[in-house]
Amino acid sequence: MREPFGPNFVKSFIELEKTIETFITSSLDGLGYELVQAKVLGPRGGLLQIMCERKSREMMAIEDCVTISNEVSGVLIGEGLLPKDWRLEVSSPGVDRPLVKPSDYDRFKGHEISLEVEVFSKKKKPVKGKLLGISGNLVKLFMDGETFELDITTIRKANLVVDDLMGDPGK
Image 1 (cartoon, helix red, strand yellow):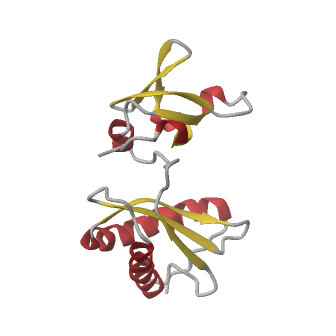
Image 2 (cartoon, one colour):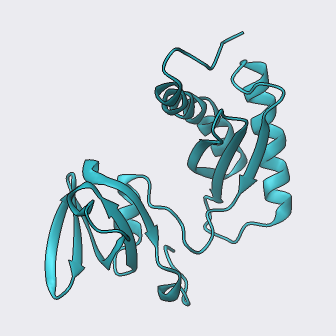
Image 3 (cartoon, one colour):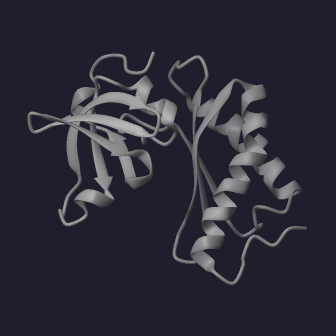
């Protein structure tokens, strides 16, 4: 059985998230779902949050979350990656969907996004702008009347802005 904790707790969580993503991606794919992200939450862990969406881009239902939960918990407990005293939370990404993969920045181009970027870290709140897409590692954003190119590795967090999502995004 694998031990998910190591001497450096935060680093261990990041490594654990990547390992979990690796183990569950093919199972989810076989069920018709795509992993958006896996997050370990809580000061000492204790909660694993899995965000998924249908590959068909149809809306998720509670039955989808139950199916995913049953599959994922079986895989992770079997591999020793989910301690029995942890909780597993499965959800859709919601309307303020996080942008995690480079392909997300092309899929949602034209939408307004909110970003936390290392370059703008002196600002107290995230910056907002219209997503113009991605080219290589450079995310293009229109903000304050100018176009900016940001290295994707400097983006700490990115989400769709809810006000912009009254249509049918990402199809």
